[in-house]
Amino acid sequence: MAVAEKKPLGDTWEAQLAEAVKLANVPTLLMVLVQLTGDLNWMEAPYTPKRGRGLDDNDSGGLPEEIQDEIRAAAFGEIREWHQNGNVELPEPSGDLAATMLSRAMGEQVTPAYGQIVAAELADKSFKRTPVDAPEGFNVLIIGGGMSGICAAIRLKSAGIPFEMIEMAQDFGGTWRENRYPGAGVDTPNHLYSYSFAQYDWSHYFALRDELFDYFRTVARDNGLYDYVRFGTKVDRAEFDEDAGEWIVETSGPKGNETRRVSAIFSAVGVLSIPKVPPIPGLESFPGPACHTAEWPEDLDLTGKRVAIVGNGASAMQVVPAIADKVSEMVIFARSKQWAAPFPQFRKPVPEPIRWLLREVPLYQKWYRQRLAWTFNDRIHSSLQVDPEWEEPARAINRTNDRHRQAFIDYMKAELGERQDLLPDVLPDYPPFGKRMLLDNGWYRTVARDHVTLVPEHLKEVRGNTLVAADGREFEADVLILGTGFQATELLASLDVIGRDGQRLRDVWDGDNARAYLGSTVPGFPNLFTLLGPNTGLGHGGSVITPVESQIHYIVRLLEQVFEKGAHLVEPKPEVYENYNERVDAAHAAMVWTHKGMENWYRNSRGRVVALTPWRHDDFWRMTRDADLEDYLLDA
Image (cartoon, rainbow, N blue to C red; front, side, top):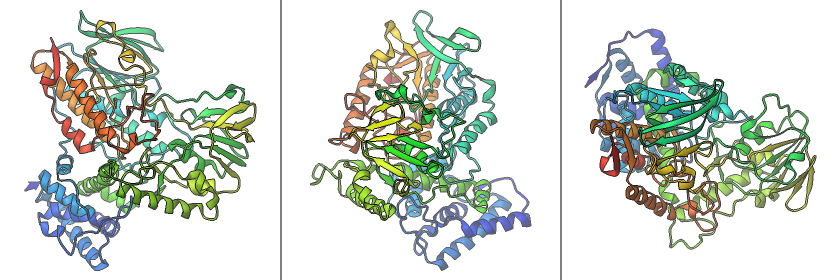
C-alpha cells in the first residue's frame, strides 16, 4: 500500500470532483477504481466496457446508464478518500496485470507484452532521470531545440552531463515554431502527444499550433533550458578528430563563425524540417505571394483572393478548410489521393471539469493517456501486415484492411453529399494506411463547395498568374501555396558530418539511404547520436515523442555503461548495424508501405523505407530499455 501526504478536503474540491466525475470517461474511471481499491472485480461483468468505434473516446464504455452511474458514484467516493489519505492499493500493477486492465478498458484484447510499457509509465519509470557518473571534461552538443532536443536536454541535465544546445531559430519549439499556417495542428491527441514526464493543461483534445508551441516553450522554460541554448546559430560542419577523440564543430551565428570541441553530439535536427519544393517550370515567374506552408508569412492576407494550393497531404488538408471562408476562389492541385479518417474531436474543447480532473487526479490522467496510446499507437499495427493469400491486393492487403477501406469510403460519400461526382477524384487507388492516415477536419466538405475546384493532376507549369495543370487546364491565381511536404528521407541534410577516416555521413548514407542501429548510432561515427533518426518515424499512428523518449533513455544508459568501463567513445559494430537494418527491411517488406504500386514519402529513391519504423511502440521500447556493450566498439 502506498500512502501519500494527507491533504485537507474542502467543499470546493469535492464539488469540482462531483462535476468532473459526471463527465468523465467511464473506462478510465474503472481503471482508477481498480488501482485505488485493489478490487479486480471492477474489471468483470457487468462493468466490462464494450469496444469503442474508430477513434472515439468511448466515454460511456457502451454500458447501461445504471451501471455507469454505479461506476461514477464509486469513483467519486474512492477518489475523495484518496485525496484525503493518499491510499492506493495497487500503486504499481505488474506488466501482466496492466495488460489485462488495458484490455478491459478498451473492450478488446491488448497484446500481453504491451503491458510492460503501460506498467512502466503508470509507475513513472519509463523515462528515468537519474544521475550518471560522467568522466571529467565530457560534454555534449545538442543540435536543435525542437521536441527531441528539449527531451535530450532534460535527460542530460538530470544525468549531470554538461551540454550546450544550438538552435538556428530564435526560440524552442521546432516544427511548431516554424509551421504557423492556418489550421496547423496535431493529428495525435495532445494528452498523448506530450512528454510522459511533463503533462499539460490542454484546452483542446487536438491542439492547434499556438498551444503546441506554448507547450514546448513552457517545458523548456520550466526545466531551465534557456540557460543552455544559443539561438540564431547554425551548425555548418562537424568533423571527428581521431587523435583527440572529439568532435570539432563549426557554427555560424550572431558571433560570426566559431569552432568548438565536444565529446558527443546529439543530433535533434528533426525529420520534417527542410521544405520540399518541387521543380515546377516557371515557379519563379508567379507575381503574387508564393510560399511553402512551413514558411507562411505572418502578414499574408487571403481575404477575397484567388488562392491555389499545390498538394493534398497533411498540411494542405489542414490549411484548405481553415482558409476556405476567406478566399473568393480556390483551386487545389492534388495529384495523389489520401485516405482520411473521421475526426470526431476536431477542434473540440476539453470541458473545464475534465481539465480539472486531469490536473488533480494523476491516475485518471495516466489511464486516459494509456487508452489513447493503444488507440492511436498500436491498435492497427497487426492489420498493416500483408496477407499473401488475400485475393484482392490492389484494393487492400488483408481482410481487416479491406473493412477499413469500405468504412472510409462510406465516410467519404457521406461527407461529399450531393457532390458524388468528386468521389473518383478523392478515392485512393491503394490500400488504406499505405501513406500516413490523415484525419479529416472538413476537407471533403470543403472541396465540395461551389468556389473550390479540385484538380486531380499535378501543377505542370506556372506562367505568371496562370497555372497550368498536367491535363492542360489553366487557372488564374493571386496567391500560390505549396503544401508539398518535406525532404523526409535526407536526414541531417542541413549539415556536413565527417567521421573516422574522413568519411562523410551523406556518402555513407548515399544521399537518401539513411540507416542507423536502433535509429541512433552509425559505425565510423563515434559518439554521434541521431534522435528521431532513420526508421524511427511512425506510419501506423501515434505520438513520435514515445520513440524519442526511448532513444534518449537508451543513449544515456549506453553512455553510462561506457563510462563504467573507463571508455568515452562508442560506436556500433558494423555487423550489428547491418543485421539490425536487414531486420528492419525484412519487416517492412511484409507491410503495407512496400506493397506493390505504393508511393509515399517514407521511401527513398530506391524504394527502401527510410523514415518509418516497422516496430510497435512497445517493441522498440523493449529494444531500448538497456544497452548491450557487446553490440559496440569502445575506445578510451
